[in-house]
Image 1 (cartoon, helix red, strand yellow):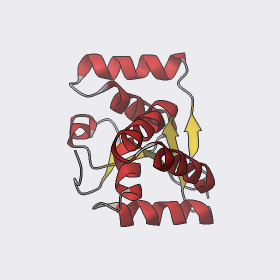
Image 2: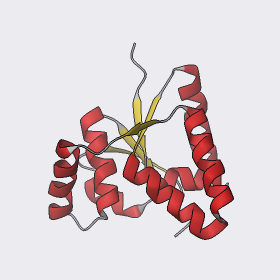
Image 3: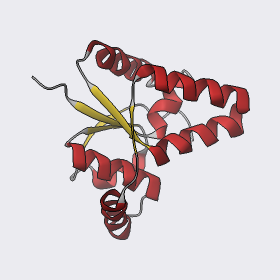
Length: 139
């Protein structure tokens, strides 16, 4: 049986690394992935979003630490190719949602995955992709 795929957006990783509401749910997914019971992916753009927000709020040392830990967790970082970029553009043209969020949604569509987030903007695309909701803890 193939491990179910999950797409993390920056919200999920920020909740985890900042120990905000939803951190336990993300921690459980990371443990499942470590055991081979889940597959975790993030687009390189959503990863960069999480890094710049960490840098802005906590400094360069913390941002580098977080990036190193993401690599240790074995989260698959997916490059944005033409097809993914255009799928996200289609979503952006149809919904009032940030382009980085559209990339996460497009990746979830590509992988037939569940998005893990607490960002309320994803409610707009919930009919297109599955969403595992985290509590909203940061802005």
